[in-house]
Amino acid sequence: MISSSLRPNPAAVRSAALAQPWRLSLGYALLLGALACVAPGWAGGDVRAALLPGVPSAIVLGLFWLGRNIERRRVTMALTTTTAGFLALTTMSSLGAVDRLEGPGGLAVAFQLACLALSAAFLATTATAWRRVNEEGAAADALLRMYEEL
Image 1 (spheres, rainbow, N blue to C red):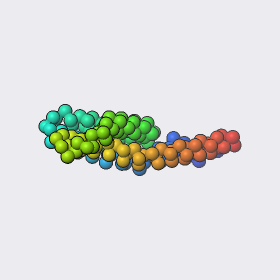
Image 2 (cartoon, rainbow, N blue to C red; image 1 turned 90 degrees about the vertical axis):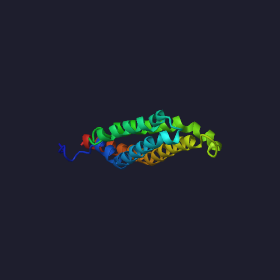
Image 3 (cartoon, rainbow, N blue to C red; image 1 turned 60 degrees about the vertical axis):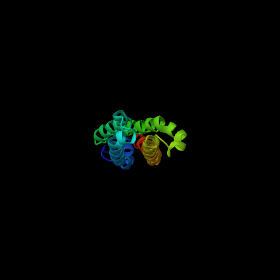
Image 4 (cartoon, rainbow, N blue to C red; image 1 turned 120 degrees about the vertical axis):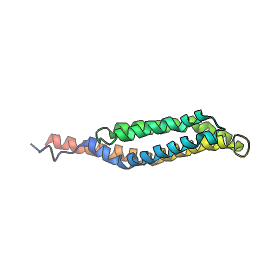
């Protein structure tokens, strides 16, 4: 029988592949928090505008903290990616208002575009990591099946 310390751990392999995006999620949350701080100034003085990036920022910060545990990292990163996707979908309509950037309300449009750009950049960086998670996880699963056959 093969020692359990030599057996591959597919969950650990998948979590290790998410280490870089997990660290990037902290920067993403902090940048969203910074946008929440300037939101009232950009949105015509309405403090409720801070909720658009502020709530996802708080969620991502909480998920970053929970993701310190390597067993939970895959789940927390899936939820973080989902949060970024929802923020991107929420602010996608600002693309239709790009022509209003120069007129009244232009700062509000720029604010939503900034939220969209941050979310899209985060999603783009995590896409390659999720592909690597699937590929390396499948390889670890196959190796584990080989170990179990021995």
